[in-house]
Length: 204
Image 1 (cartoon, helix red, strand yellow):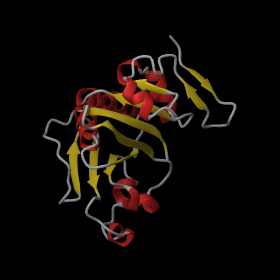
Image 2 (cartoon, rainbow, N blue to C red):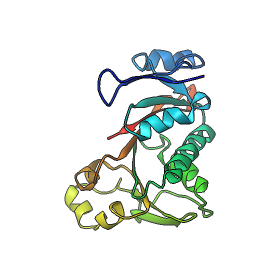
Image 3 (cartoon, rainbow, N blue to C red):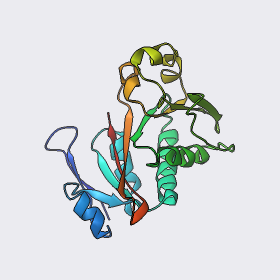
Image 4 (cartoon, one colour):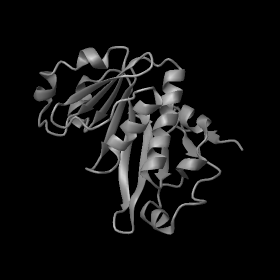
């Protein structure tokens, strides 16, 4: 089975996946009916994710559970580290409880971090040591201005060889080099599907 990419619209061509919509719950299709390229996590190919990392397309993924979200993170981690993408910056956007820290857990464990992963809401940053690389986990939820972020001196981490995962990154955008990888987490139906998420992935 192959993924097909229509790049006629330029570098960010529309992405068509043969499994799009096939196994999505009806509530998801109704809520996200404009996302005609949404793909369930288990149906993703590495080629799909690599195309996103290369900036050729964006992608909407349906995750049915935290386990699937961690598995998605692990696959992205393996592709990023396998390409020796030093200095990668990953922006994690979404409401409280939408799966951002869950994603970080899957990513960190995939690169050999053994310690417990928690959100650094009050400390602003955790540093984890993986296999051959460092992971910088930021959480800017409590910050209220770009000046507050500028005072932290985070640029040395953003421009270093480690991988930065940033929760609540909106105020940090002016300080980020290059085209970061952006993930936006949305809750589908908290009452009937409390663990389901839609995750949009693309280059910022």
